[in-house]
Image (cartoon, rainbow, N blue to C red; front, side, top):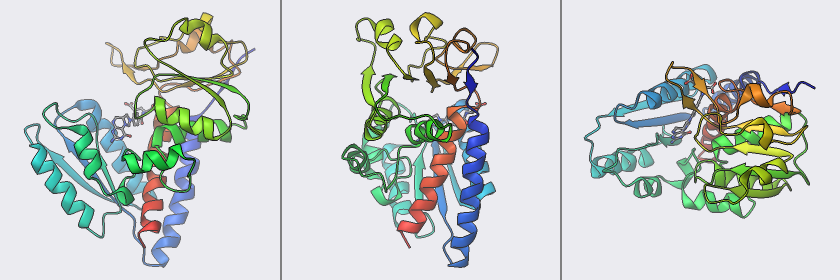
Length: 283
Ligand SMILES: Nc1nc(=O)c2c([nH]1)NC[C@@H]1CN(c3ccc(C(=O)N[C@@H](CCC(=O)O)C(=O)O)cc3)C=[N+]21
């Protein structure tokens, strides 16, 4: 059996087209969504992502305001900029690209973003809303993108054994919450999990967010399972590769996301969705 390759590029394009229409309608009502993207330092990967976000904004008709600050920017300077953006009416969403340079306290920065402009859904207030099951506000972008990929492929989450490998605040924890909210039976694994292979073998839906290239091998996955790959690992030859051994697993799974072209583009589409939502909420 060969798995369905879940086409994140196509599905994210569908979402962007839906949003483009919605923005045209909002424009008629004099609502013009705007996103501020703040990048500190020179991380080349971050620059690629930030550029992809700007392109998506342009396509949908969201105005993007870009702030590229030098590596030496102080925490105070960054907090001052966020304070200004919090008060700027044309800015509906604020995104501070992570990771930040080591001398800046990431938590302090994320707490300073007005929750109503927190399109990443990283502020504890919004994280809390998601965890109590309120899903009509901002949703965390990568986790929401994963759920959307599963739903638009007509795969049921309810009652399924969902295993998430990784417990980061950006992916592992919030995707566990969203799967639980969709009535999945969720196990969140991490580096201290015992018998990880065995736990993964029980998964009907496996989400790999580990950060290690091709960590999940064929012998770790169940026949007919759904495999979602959140990994973005840059190999020495410059190629992008996921946390799942795609070639090894694709004939055992019933559906699998590729890297690139899977979860990554969905993250951006869901960010755009949050921006449009932000503009609606603020008007
Ligand atoms: N505040 C903040 N919000 C984020 O959402 C955020 C962040 N910081 N820091 C870094 C991670 C990573 N991330 C990705 C977004 C798009 C792709 C993406 O478009 N990937 C393409 C390939 C892009 C390429 O070729 O490099 C794909 O998988 O097809 C990947 C990764 C967002 N992040």
